[in-house]
Image (cartoon, rainbow, N blue to C red; front, side):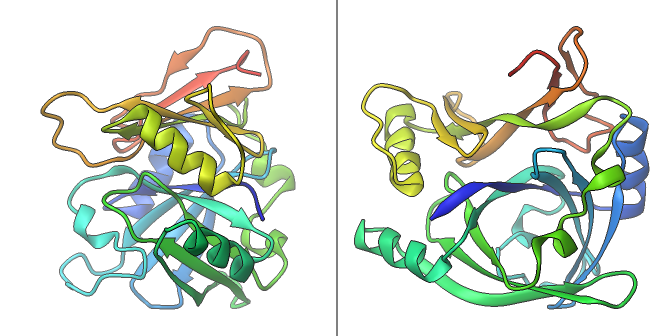
Length: 249
């Protein structure tokens, strides 16, 4: 079954610069490594609730080769481009979704090397769709703690402790909620929002004439300390819409 929101993908052009900018926003950034396909590298911003931000950049922006998730087409755009749900049985989840009429690519093997040379491995699958309304799926083959650091790495000076709400732009809110409910294997006849683990997935209507496609558009983080909610600087966040809301839960 799908157990939780695993992570959000934020595409950046310069990983080193983006890491420094996110640190200036009060996040602790952990170096990730190079993906097994040799196309992308990443850095992680893990949270206490187990979710994380993945800052991703293509190692060679001029190379037309795309990765499994189809992220190159977003260049030169920066920002929130994709999200991922964790599965404890990817074969079963893929079969269930296909029985509901979804077309699923994968599962395929993936992995990356940590800076110390250790290899971490996973399997992932993606749902064929226009845009990124639905997440791609991941199942760990090595311990998740190797892929997602915890402890001090998940403690942030700005007080962020986890992802409370993810806004997902969609041409039809009710239709999006129906698809998300089917994905999460829940019955939802009244609420436009869908809960995946501790995170609320909230479809929002795309604006008329909006050039963007369906997919994640903004994220609300919960903080550890009381205080005023605030929008983080989108320039320093490299195009990602992030709100820190200490009282969200």
